Image (tube, rainbow, N blue to C red):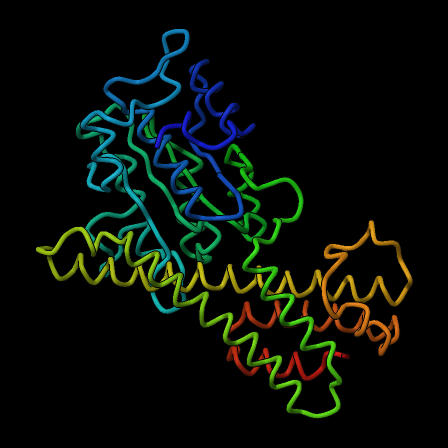
Length: 349
């Protein structure tokens, strides 16, 4: 994909192309947004544009890739020697210091060595950190050394859906481009249908534990669907599906990266689902205050008013706090099913 192919030439792309046109490219970029997949495509397109053999030019400088030359194809297939991808791995889904600086157990290539080597076959070396907010403390401190003294012809691209979790010292050394949508991400029809089902069930009388566990079952079923779909989607795009005859060490590395990527994307989508639930509970709270429909996220959603008639404004506020607490707990190593069960049992319906 080239920059021109992105739907709606976003403000972030315009700023990036303006820097390319003026020859004022930064040594480090932080691309933030709602979905890592989209950010990876942007980073890949930037790498292609910097090294394209037949780039689209403006004022004599490359501002987009041709998306067809040998270099572009190599970068798309993930086998270009001068483009290095770093992803969270290990059971903790972190980017570890062994991926950044040389250690005894480090992989064949690490970030700090890669960026200081001369380009092999292209003009620029590009290093992409996917999920940069997953840098652990030691890795982040080691990475800072490269950010402070960047070599020429090396570009660092950090991708994050949660840039607020990055160290301020890293944020201050990157040019930041935001590719998130305007305002809260709109729910799609599938999400709305799920919320309709949840709301209708919550609107029924909740006098027994059985009703609560039905709600929990609806939530867990949706999360199982999300995990299955995420696993299938990321597995299909993994290099493990493209190359059969590879060394065991590389296969193990790709398997670890895939496992970490699936878990990270699942957690992001789980957070989105709980945010959707929180938005609905906010509507319930607004109904308890007799607020106007123009303030509601889902003005025609089933069950909202029925729940609001049974609880007080204070109980509605406690619901919002309960979901926020669930979100915080799920960032820790707490057992997911237990955190969700306790949280749903505390909700006032």
